[in-house]
Each structure stands twice: as C-alpha cells, then as structure tokens.
Length: 162
Image 1: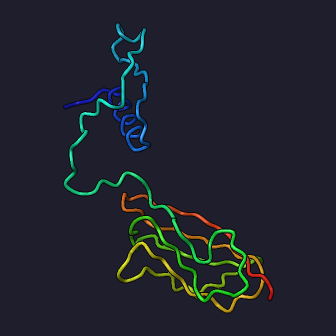
Image 2: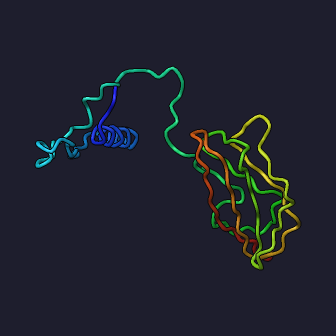
C-alpha cells in the first residue's frame, strides 16, 4: 500500500500524539490532488485509535535513551570526592559509540579512560576517576539508544573543600 505525503504526515502526527498521551489532537493534512488542494481536510487523531487494545509482540521503543540517574548527581555539591561516575539510563544502551568522560575546570580529563557498561545491566554506564580535588567538573556522555539513535549530553557537579 503506497501512502501519500499527507497520509505519512498524518501517521507521524498520530504516533507523536499517541506517545505524548494526547487524548485528542487535530491536524490539517494538505491533499496532493490539485482539485482538493484548495482546502485542507482535518484528520482526527485520538480516541479512535485503530491500534487500541492491540498488544505488540515485543516492546515498542519509540524514544531515545534518557539519563534518569547520575552519581554524582547533576549540579550536586559534594564534600567527598567520588571514585567513579555512574550513569543510569531508562533502557539498556549499546556499546557502539559509548563514551564517558569527566573533565576538570582546566579542560583536562580526569577519568581513567575506562568507561564501560555493567555486565548484567546495560542501562548502567560507569567510569573510574583519578583522585579529585575541590572544584567544578563536567561529565560528558554518548550512548547508542535501543532505537538506533546516538544520544549525548553533559552535566556538572562540584566538589567542595571540607
């Protein structure tokens, strides 16, 4: 079955509305026929979901991996220097493109270049760090989501003098 551009757009909006949990959404889809191009036809998206109640054979992953927990936490001010940085994502991530770096205020890497996933839980990514002195540090990460997209980000934490 071949779909027109407008039908593909409507399907995309339907998927986005469903994922976002929108109860009802309405969009206008431009018809591609020159006769009907003058007036857009509204397409209702919402409760009349043709897939409602259908259970997928396997879990459907429509979103990228999301960092849900970090140790040290984002914008944390800690008095004890950590021995490692631990990141936890909402789903297991792939090893391709895996990167985790900890950088000090001068721009020098202070991790031991040993970023790895936990053997039993691929949603955990960790790297050990050198002995850290008081100051501000940036954690940069890059992972491959289960949906095939690369996700990267950064956050900061601070070590306070005792």
